[in-house]
Image (tube, rainbow, N blue to C red):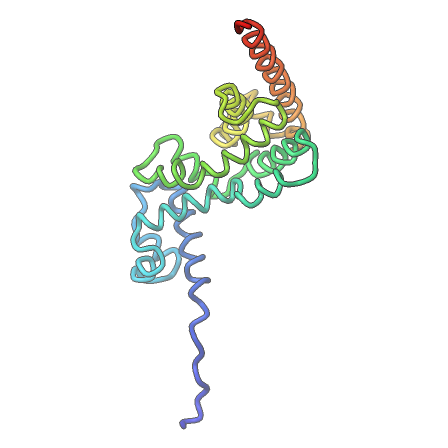
Amino acid sequence: MNGKPLRGPRSDGAATRARILESAGTLFASQGLASTTSKAIAAKAEVDLASINYHFGNRDGLYRTVLVEAHRRFVRLEELEQISASQAMPEEKLGTLLDAIVGRLAGSSHWSTAVLVRELAAPSAHFSVLRDEEAPPKLRVALRILSDVSGIPIGAPELLCCLISVAAPCAMLLVAGNNLPAPGRDILRINRRTLADHLHRFALAGLHAAGQDYRARHEEDHAQLPV
């Protein structure tokens, strides 16, 4: 024995991975995928290139992980499921969801928002990780909430139209952010809760109207069936 303390297992792996992820997210947000090299990421994260390959496989694997993390910071599946499973009324669930989304998007300057905006504006070959893996389970939960509010059943095309109408203002806040032209820029000066409440009222009015139209059409179709 030489008197030196025994070295335990490395405990900095998770911290190194997180540092690489944050550094990559910042660079991808400001420069885009094509202009961001693994060398630049490694330098910013203060790691060697081998660390990127060890934790993420390669730069493409790192970018896909950044996309997933950015989408999860926008909204997490666990959060959606918690809202959906709560004992609140459907209208209240929608309000909780909109309040959370608006609070994260309005005027956000975090890299996660910029990364999503870049990817949505000019989808890369890695967009499928969002389209096919990350978004679908979240959309299913969101559709369940909209169905409970409107009374339109899951699977009906009318419910997808409702999803577009409710999501569009949130997408505008995501894509435009602080780059909104005047007077639209004034929207970002509105209190976040006030803005969320406004979107909630409009969404509820549209969902209730769409539900009434759906039921009226189907009752009419049912009445025309031969006895």
